[in-house]
Length: 300
Image (tube, rainbow, N blue to C red; front, top):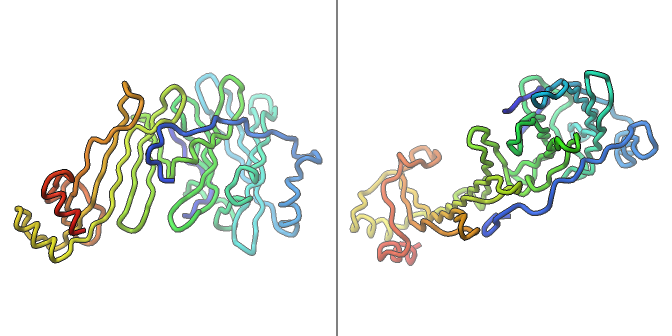
């Protein structure tokens, strides 16, 4: 289950990793009026002359649970045109009791969230309520910052039904560009090595741990004239937009408790307009251990 709410959003290789390390930690809860949090010494000095931007949301995170009011307190940094979220306050709407006040800066990648723009917008997804660990409770998925040219950092606050608190689950930060498939209860990740090199991972919760169960390495191979001539000799007709990839796929073998390679191929696609390749575009595939595969490797 996933709920998108109106908060502004702009837009490690995992080879050999079998499970995300560490455990969820209780998101620190403090009284925002105390000397411990006001809202933080760094933010107080850095944003003393900036305006506060607040947002209040309501959500029922699970069956038998009261409705929660989720209050976000942020400060607008005019110099960078970013919103820096300072606290998320969780309030039980049934009695008005504050369950948690979560300081956000200490959970960020760069010391403050970098949500682009001045205010919250109703058609975007900087804050998402979705079930991150597939236990039937909605969790908090908050945008943090853009890290490099494609990687997006987020803050994952997972509801612990035993402690009745949100916990910061840094294990999920190890999954780059994590996407949560509620139907299959899988988590997908993707990393880039270059414009033509991509690495796709699939995680599943096993024994409470996000565990790598599938990994696909797809590294670009631009056919040379020599390779094109050879490919035609072995039965691959000329293609106007031919692009090759060295694809290595591994899956988790439960009995062995480890990843094993199930496919190591050189795959060629006809890719008009530089669109993403798909099985429908595949025009040829050769096992890397075959004689053809060895010749392609030598020419690449």
